[in-house]
Image (tube, rainbow over the protein chains, first blue to last red):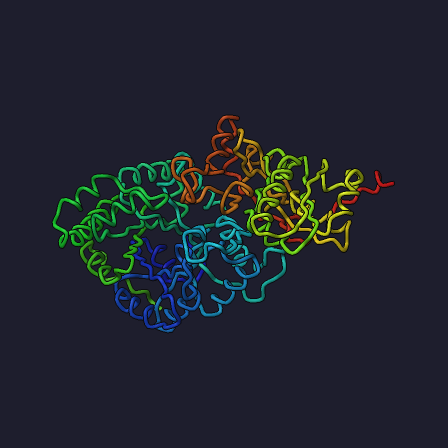
Length: 311
Length: 222
């Protein structure tokens, strides 16, 4: 996989080293300090930082503006973009806007349904879906064309990513679905949080059987649990999440004040185990509102220091 | 067919309470099937409004009537007398009938007795479910006869999303995941390989996005 963009994330993945990414959720207000503080906590331990796009459909400071903040700090953002809130005009326009600030990574998503968020009475757009957004960015970048075929003068140079959830149903199409995203042009994948490692490895087996691991960089997604309560909530309430009973039991089996540490330990052990899973090219550590724990996880798994690239 | 749901009586009452001769006007086709807006339901709404008027001590004359379909001129003839009698009409047709009636009687206040809900099927007695959003470019031939636009909450052309769990949509355990249904059906037909064909970016110009639609047939016009 040859390098096609100025993305640092792409270069690290192309070099064969394990990449580490993390994510920050923007604040529900206009003060940029939150995002700056979160980024400061993790910047020396990751290669790129995802900025979520109104995650769980709750209105927040926009992903693009927060990505620009990261650029101003000299960091590498991954612009998350959902198809829920923008039609094809707005999607293409924001892609150009992001590219004008040298934002070189994009993660194409459909987004949670708005009924989960603060604007339950709002419309959703879904003019495109996530697979068609992947196609759109690739066409804009590689063919210098807008969707309707007009020429783009300075095409956006973006490394194109998407999510994959091996744990959603039906399981039998979860490998074909990845193949579909690859056919659309996706170049890196950040997976849903992995707690059921057996099932994840089974999915990866299917991925390797079709040689898909050689066509896309897969970053395994991990979120440390803060408590047994959080594990139970994710197990029972979050759609598409697979938290095995053993994980809940293990967390519940230690005193409350030790559960957070146990959660970090589980996360570290998972990364160690997945390092030897063929086709895993990095880790996406999503410590939700717990960014200060990212350095510990990255250091304990031997993924620190992060590589520096020759300019 | 078109499915509708009666508005709360209070809401209907608020619309008509200042009138003197009110006609509750049924539409005996689609909305009669879901037992919300047929001529029989118009009769019931009229009697409820009469009781309400008595309770409120207001002198309003309330009658009921109805026709087969409020979306076609030819059916209106039989109701001319009642419509001319009224100084306001509560139409229990879908939004199409309400508008058609309003267009025909330009000075007559016409109020909707129903909320028009969706284009759906009678899944079983008392259960009506959405099947079509009239996007104007049918894709059912590619999706195993199951519409991802009407039946996926995110109208994903290339689904399912990551929220599909045990065959159900992330919105509710009572709602089938359209893409699970599509995949099951493709499998049933031995065409699961079709799943990997990418559905291209959709042309929504034949949907409401392209503005109000009309269909003109020169060949059958007289």
